[in-house]
Image (cartoon, rainbow, N blue to C red; front, side):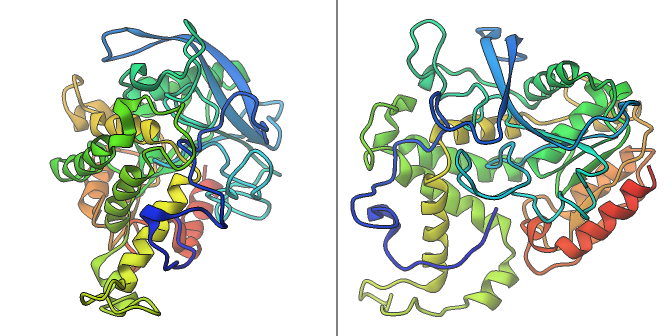
Length: 398
């Protein structure tokens, strides 16, 4: 999801930013860590749609807010994060938060989503690794990490938890629910699960139902993680630093990141160039594109959790707003409020046709707004000028 340069050292042997700092078995936020800007809400026992255990007991949700809810309670905006995002949508990297806000370009003073005008809320999803109950959290029976015991969760389970959070915050109706990729999927789910509580949606680079191609790409990522012997079937939390499943998760990230960028952008940016200092043709060096992907593999391992990657990827696979509801078009027909559907023209993960189908099914859609970019899916992060212009115009019209 982010792009900040290339490093040349081999990622599988990465020992951190300096000697003596091996990659941790998990980079999940754990009880006792600095809370940062997180607030916590006890969800209670959360019903689960598909898992045989039926309920996630004693669940908790980590969330952040910016701005104030006005007296009319009509200025609340929910920002839903993508696969490896979290509740820290806005702000700097600081104690408790590994990175700065993942959508600082969209949210902030003077931005389309402005805390001076809006009450902005974002939460880490159920199954996440940044404060909401997930595989790294303590199991209520024994206090040990859930690990392999953590249940299968769907996008609908995640939205059910978000509905409870809205109740907790006293928000009867969101002015807007917006989010890219997996966040857009949850915005879409809200329109069916609680349409009367949604004033508008803005899914960006998303889809109404994951396709076979999208499931195929994520299946390869899941296989990479679970095949890592240091994954230990999901029970690796007691492993020493450097002895966790960062290799498998890194391979998964490299597969995913390739789908986040376009073929033309990778060719234009890297081509067949070599990483400085090494010839890859049988002499142990790397192509520049290899180094770039390995850099992103290391970065993710230092801020994420392998079990969470697995559970959230499975939740994305589960996404079909029309499942058991008569199909996508029938399910979305009830929602007549405004919708801003945004696509990136070079997105090969969630291509333009996904947004066109969504647009056709939503009677309140303004037509697909297309971000023109050579970048691919990550255009929702890179092309802030175009995206912000679409969002600002849409939000002002609500």
